[in-house]
Image (cartoon, rainbow, N blue to C red; front, top):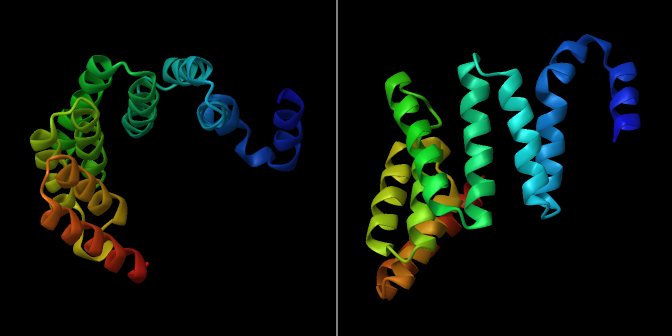
Length: 169
């Protein structure tokens, strides 16, 4: 990986500050996450966090990445705390990515079996998305939550909504 990093720096010298400043760490964290190496991914994100504590946009992206890892590790309480912090910050700044933190909170409640609360968060995430940029994944998540909550009609409606949204993209 270090060889790849060196080659990347040679190919893109104008990005050397960004790459040295954490972008490479984020790539490594994401790569490890996708390989299922969750503790190593968390370690890389932690190193990036130390490099970028003062940059709000990087901090929010990192919070979302760390929440995903914690969620997959089964650390629901910590994932929920971090997702709530991200949501609070996004609400203060009227962030366009507010729906992502709401979706993470919905996913946390879904995995804990709190389907009604998951539906609340997923519904709010759906409402916060621009009408021209609705994400099918949010509709799928709403479908799953309604299905697990025993509401087959709502589940079907949300799965159909996801299909319509995905066809537009």
